[in-house]
Image (cartoon, rainbow, N blue to C red):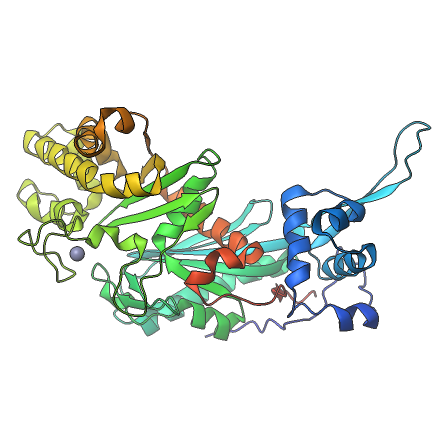
Length: 433
Ligand SMILES: [Zn+2]
């Protein structure tokens, strides 16, 4: 495996200029490894920038002097930059520096495992896509082989970042299946068992020294949708593929519930909540999971007689108007409405997004979904819920993973229940030239 040694802390030149040493009085007083106050400054500029140091010191209740040290440190690290603004006319204003995030110089990486493919996307902090590629894992029988393929793809993205003199700050890997709560390693992936044992966070740390949060596909789906979800609305994102996954979020923040070391379920596993102890056997081993009624793998089995072998076939079968399939979709949609009603009610969900390769099937059962929902929470409350079907789920998914990587970098606390976070703002400096 090639390892383009990314040397942490290596000073790279910005726009070809030779970079000065950071003065010792800043270096010694503000370490990026103990950055509680620096992170608050960074978050403020991220949310409210451009702003002046005076505005920041007021907002954060920090002394001007302390504030200035943080700004200098963050500027030196390539995170902030200043614009000098000279007030027009003869007013009393003096020229002042307005600070903002150096969005074009920083980047994040999104990895999406959507079996049998894996995708890697590089975006700078303006969300411009600079690299996006996928590779098939179909021939991989073991997680070691998958790790090799992923590394080879990440090397390309890293090369692109290096060529553009970007600093890669954080990565986010979105994975299917059941993950180890502490590490994000894949514990069980019934729909693609070769993933089992894959620890992407560890791989990225070892091969690229890149802080990486490995989490469920649901997180990437949520962040993919988050940009279009109104503020202060709680959203439920359902992704429909071979399995059935769920994510909840509010104000670009994923709602997480830690399932505990063993025991409990993560929110993303809502599809494996049993709704009938005597129901059909799910391939997770339990009976009567929602997924055992509505997962793509069930539909592939049920309609195999109609020559259906792929998820795309299922979408086409629905479009063809096949009567038996239409009826099945209406039944499934009603069942989803009934059994998601509790979660929708409990979390105050007002926006529902259906995404994934089977999302188009929802068009055939939309009315029945609302019927099921209304049976539980009443017609008044159910009719207030907005449901949208996402068309370009793959683009959304990749954008979502990269967005999640940026979010983790700026707001690690929001992900504190998901563990394996970087405690430093350092990121990876690409060697200049
Ligand atoms: Zn199950």
